[in-house]
Length: 111
Image (cartoon, rainbow, N blue to C red; front, top):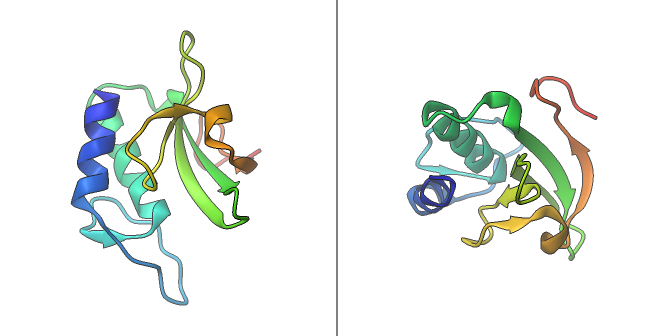
């Protein structure tokens, strides 16, 4: 289910950068990394995953660029990363990203 939703959202949203105002939207046809994250989070919750298992992370890529990803907390596979830059679901350490901040179970509270 996670792989299917990740692939569908990656295919359904056309990547575009936000203008001067960064808005985070759900179910858009075009958007930036935060829009992918919010759409994937919404779809996974509707598919039955508990919201408390989903984290939004602000990361730096290997090239030093700011990026947002969705992290699915699991007990048996490690934390899985859903990322619009790749169709492959990886664990957080496999991405090479440096986590700058991550939401807790409540997405309004960040660590």
